[in-house]
Length: 115
Image 1 (cartoon, one colour):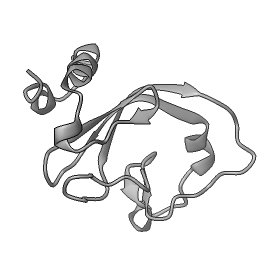
Image 2 (cartoon, rainbow, N blue to C red; image 1 turned 180 degrees about the vertical axis):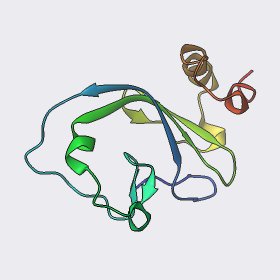
Image 3 (cartoon, helix red, strand yellow; image 1 turned 120 degrees about the vertical axis):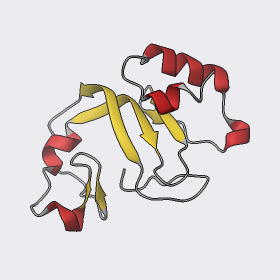
Image 4 (tube, one colour; image 1 turned 135 degrees about the vertical axis):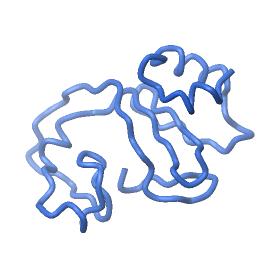
């Protein structure tokens, strides 16, 4: 999350809504984010405490939704991969499948865009 920006309008940070995670390992060393902590959902300078990086790195996000507050675009995370393509390269069939899979958790504003 510390590296991802909207490919269309370049807004940073993106909002993250996690649907599925897997616990992977207990890391000995962790890389700390520089600007934004997706685990705590806040800019580091706004956290008011040291982020819990070790807990964050124990988990791998499998399925999630990234949304841009500025332009309203959304991007699925499918099988651990953020699918962040420009509008003209997006696979609408895969997007519909993703939305259908997580229909009960996907915001209505996103569901309405996929018809």
